[in-house]
Image 1 (cartoon, rainbow, N blue to C red):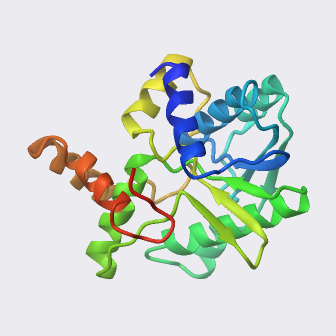
Image 2: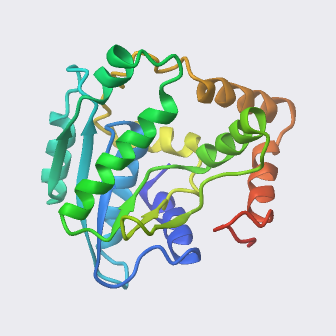
Image 3: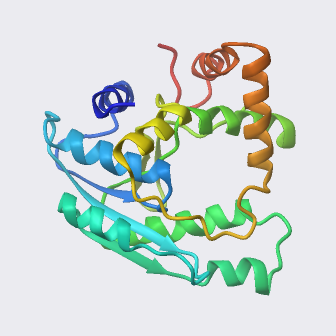
Length: 239
């Protein structure tokens, strides 16, 4: 995927859900993976011509595994003239050593988001951008159906009243295949995920299930995404 295509899809989502307003200070959550680096690229490029002025700062929550090389991310932020902050935490030790969680993903996500949002507030940001893409939306719906018995997914834009922060997800129209194509074309400095359960989670199972559904029923992912848009789930609207 070329940058022009990424910017087109990102701007469609931003405009459709009014994600960016004049003067916004946006914290970009950067894990070091392909999704967050693609989002950083998109927002940095969009900033050059978007009619509403906004600023960016990058934030990484280091889980404390001790094997996360963030120098390539730091260099990219310096290239883009984007301030970059790394939050050191003991989340990894808490989950795997202290609590010995067998299914740590949900609690890990909650703790990571809490640390990220808190730092965003400290840095004067009013919005936090997460790098969830279209496949994440679809997989979240299936996870909710299979394991919770409800039809639910995160919204493109959410207001956190306790934090007085907006969470925006500008890549909801971008497929994971497009992200992979963008990563390969622009040689993004992706950092290896240090989590010991990476690739062995319920989400990974649902990711494989979704690929199988698409393989056997061409267009299945597009239809599921449309069902989400037209479902009346809070924060979504049919287009």
